[in-house]
Length: 562
Image (tube, rainbow, N blue to C red; front, side, top):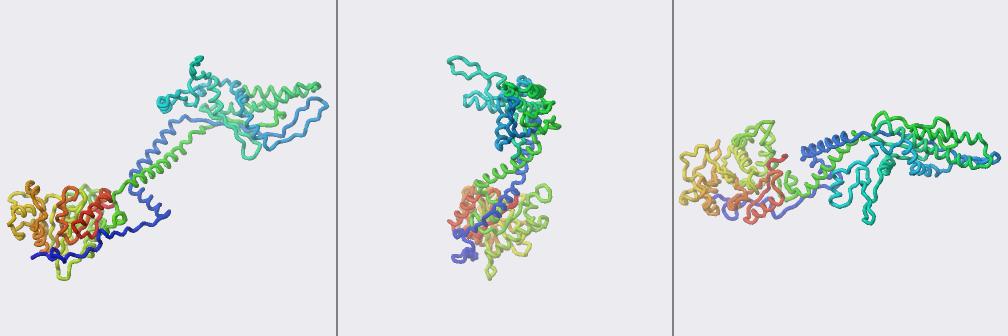
């Protein structure tokens, strides 16, 4: 008796046709972006965590490798400028304080003349910290590529001999390089809109910053007092007491600059006074190890997210049912979780995996197979006369899990009291005892026998499930078999006359055998391996099935949540 689904005009209606795809767009906006970022972070949480920890470790190593530096700051308060009287009869001009004077005095402190006075007075020309250091490996590499002389770590070019007429670089004296390094370590700034100027110096020597900052402040006082002393000494009738007072202030400021300290006498004629002496630092001011580590963590997260986002733009693999429906338009009948590992146990054997839906060990997996059966009942219901259906499972590549889904679904249907036959083509299925195998132990064997009627074909019994492999143990028979033969339809119709038939089709990447068998199915379900099959592969598979007029009712995402 020919199965009614094989009679022309009796095919089940196509519920979700492949050609009529409606892609449901996801919500847009900041909320959707945050959800997408959270999904990416969760899916790649291991990679993101490892990358962030590597960045934090690199930042911590960098912070520990950096030489600690110390900073000392001296504060100078500008006072109203008083003009020095050049004679006893001259009346000094009233004291004034220009609003823009602070910015001008900052430039005075930064001037090469004042800094050179501090540099020479403290004898820093031979200080090891200020000597030029060899260029880094990166600078040497850049120099070898560009052909330009590499700069030292302090920014200066190495000394080179100057030869007349050769155009060689002029020789840079060691003192010049040391002074340039010294000047780069001094910072001068105005505190807000006040008349307070802070002079800071940074050094790896914990005792040097306070000396340099105090010496710079004293040099500034010396320069101002010295100018007044010179102006006063040029007067024809200058009082000796006034000259002595200015001379004492000059001497005190000069000694302070030489010793790296503050004047031991008041300097009222300097038009400024020191309100905060630079003290020896109690601890290093840098590098900020905590900030560097935090920066490393933030940088790791940002670069990790960026790399994952860029990879996601080119990653067309399907991982969820929502992505399957959005990208291909196919209805997701079920999302089956990965059951290869459960509760920390080792990987199960194949017989245990094939019965997992009915043993109750993995409730999530069993519930997903039950949902799949319900979705099939809705999409491809049996007719009122009690006819049975042929349901085919196909995949784009091997290893998608067709056999796992087919056998678990078969056991679930068998538990409900209905007869089910599994036509296995994903792998060659035989009983463990190969002795005495009949000559018609597979569809290919039946085709080779030619005259063998379907009722004479041996179906293997597996816990009440009838199993018939597609392929033969004879490789030569598999190579010459014609699965488009009408005898295949007769075999499937005979199996369907006894109950539901589940076709475990071979993968479509290896051969066209799956297409030859899929056209006999009442409903075809695509098996998508989460994270392995791309959108293009599923689209190509759906188009191939449409060419043979296969009734694709949807797809199932296997190993979801990996």
